[in-house]
Length: 120
Image (tube, rainbow, N blue to C red; front, side, top):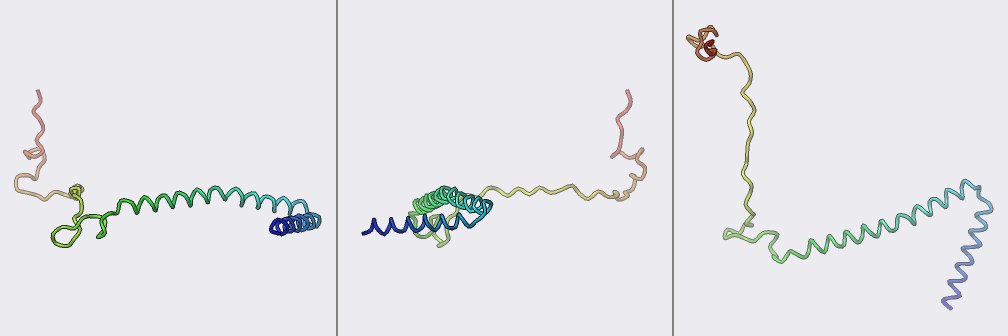
């Protein structure tokens, strides 16, 4: 009985496809076949995505043996986090502006700050 129902469904689909194919233009048939093949081509990709997401979910659940969370608890009830890297702050240069005038430094040639090496 089950084979008869499947055979009747296949015959109905074949007759319906034949009737639709007679009435549609060749461009419409080409587009319908392209859509059908595009859907069929997407099935393996969808199956791969489902398999990888299942594997990722299993991998995330496996290492969680601690029911409190990801890190073990310390004596204060807070999670004991792993050692953090040191914080390094890089500061930019001081703002470039005019240097304040100081006594004895008004003339650059006489200033020891801007002294040039003696000629040899």
